[in-house]
Length: 294
Image (cartoon, rainbow, N blue to C red; front, side, top):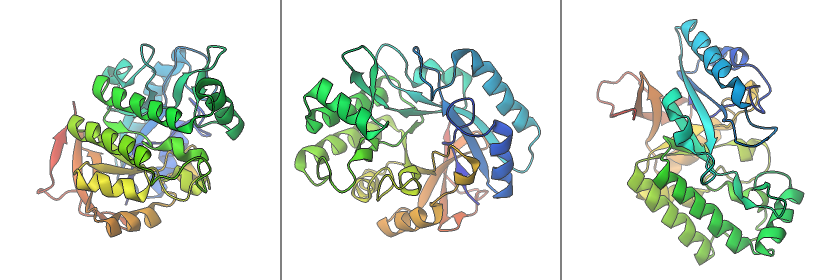
């Protein structure tokens, strides 16, 4: 049995309503499910929830939870960090947990935010317009924003921490072994470790054939393990069919690296649980380490 705390519904750019996501999770025998649609933004964005829909979103999750006895359901949001505009702290009082992510890096000349995980054309347009084509400057800024988010608006979970690699398949822009890149990543992990955040291992890039590795890359996962930073496994599903997509494969990779536990939200507490390639092991073991929700 698995858990997943990063999935989307049709309140944002997800394909199905809350009830359908919950129904599929039940069929899969999942232990717990966290719904985390894209949070509202203070400007129009097709892939985010409209501000006026937030109460209805939370209401549907509450309704699903009241009707479900064989699986735990939690209300979350994937919240962007945009300085002075929105952050995981914006919504935290309404939620069971937050996933904090950086999708926008600075502004285009027309004042719009540059989305780093859109099409290749949009990525290149922003890279040239804002940074004169310097991928190093863009990546430095991306990780600077990630560190600011962790320090200033600490989320429970840091989402797809190296997603800016999305258009770098085949080392198109840079090699991850380059010292400057590794320095940015390691500095960011040090900040995450100090803040006590969870880092998600996100399989979406794999099953969408956008990346050859999950977010984050295997060498980063080793750095995470070395710092004793907790991880959770998620799929960033935008369709119920993807709730556990590539979990077996990636769980095997995590075990090979040396991870022994995942951190999951269970009984209202973040809990460290052992796992194998088939899912969570003995979730009700009384010796498990619990971490109370903030």
